[in-house]
Length: 597
Image (cartoon, rainbow, N blue to C red; front, top):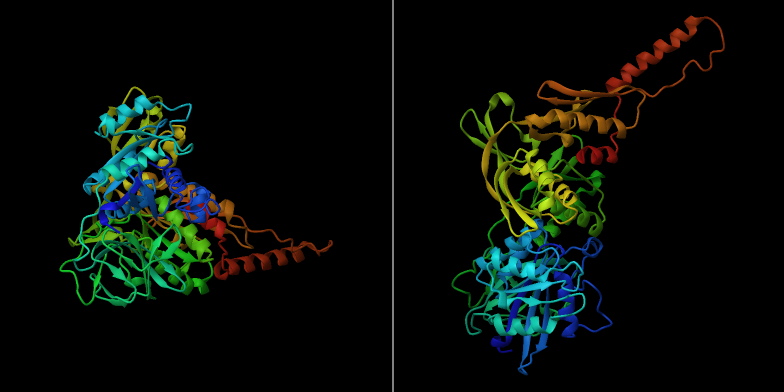
């Protein structure tokens, strides 16, 4: 097909502004799939996405659209997530496009992630088409949102399209604007092959399937291709497109989006952002690829049953294939056995990854306390990056510790400003500015340590603002802090899975809360159990689980009291021995309860 008739575009917005619904209406309007196959959230093919009503993975589909000028255009649509934890998915999609639809909810207006996604698109010089969605809502204020788009985002008012994805209003106007305003892809079919790997997934029969955007040249079945990053060579077994189900085609030419199956069995051989080229006629240089994102949150993932470790290893390697922002390395714990130290972009990303591993690979997992990377400056002058409490050096060897800070942007209704400021100031924050976006909404800017943001901060803001608050953050730098290692001891033994790094001023509160929670979840044993929270050798909190009673004198009917005393002494000696050698069973619920404290 003539590449001048190809349009590659994505849909970006804040979470819950209607991206997936608009994608549904475009697919329905262009009859890209039959009415029998159609269902809501058609591009959200994960069960988890439909359950939660959020997009987790970017999804692509090829659509043929006959415009009013009589020409048939080939549209490659990529739907993207809206949550701040999945920004990497958005950046990958944007790199494969020439234009984007920027959706803004007519009742909620411009939110934090709307601004962040716009800047991502502008970095890649994409054509922006602003769309005000949900104009059918009774709470919609179109004029106010128009002003926000022009004042906050700096876009032209005449460019704005009004739409209701739910009712199908404005769908044709959006499609016409796409073919009119978004430029066709650059590149030349006569040049050597250059195709960007923007995503991948693992198929039991086909191996690792590469999702590619061809920038130059063409790729077809039977070709020998070379990965420019790894130097590996493969034969192309299948070439296809998304409609949205994978559909085999003869070739993918310059400017087209599709997939390649090369029977790659080792998931580690695929790197997202790599460039595919022709082995016989290779390209001179690789495509720019993606900026490497550093994980913000780390935690340990362990199988409940130690025998499931090989299955977990295989599952994590396949997960990495479909989620390039997820990193991992093997580790072991005295309490939990063999597992993996994993890095995530945020807490939702961590939670979703855990659920996907459990559902898609039928695993039962334990997750340890989330942590971030601290820079520990030693007295010898060397600097250690610590993401695991078990690697934290002894206090006498440390000169000082630095923790990561982020700049936080919070957009809230003006009536919530007092409650939100009170919350933020309790999180060791540094106030920067307050800006009134309009008569109803305020943007607060703070600098905060990442550990204060990654716990329940976003949920608390949503709760205080009745769901109208939004949050975005960007990495700043590392700053000096009083960080200590908080150990949890059960009968004098450290349970390394429950250890955490925490600010000294919050350690006492956290330690008391954890031992209290453990007391209510660990069942009573035949001997007394001491639960302690300690910083170094200093115990800061303690709870005791009393021994389970056993009536050893129940069979003594009368007689000398010395008979009973003899039995009680025997029982006491037995309990003392049991306390010394007895094994404490810590149930799964106790771990989860402690980690959620």
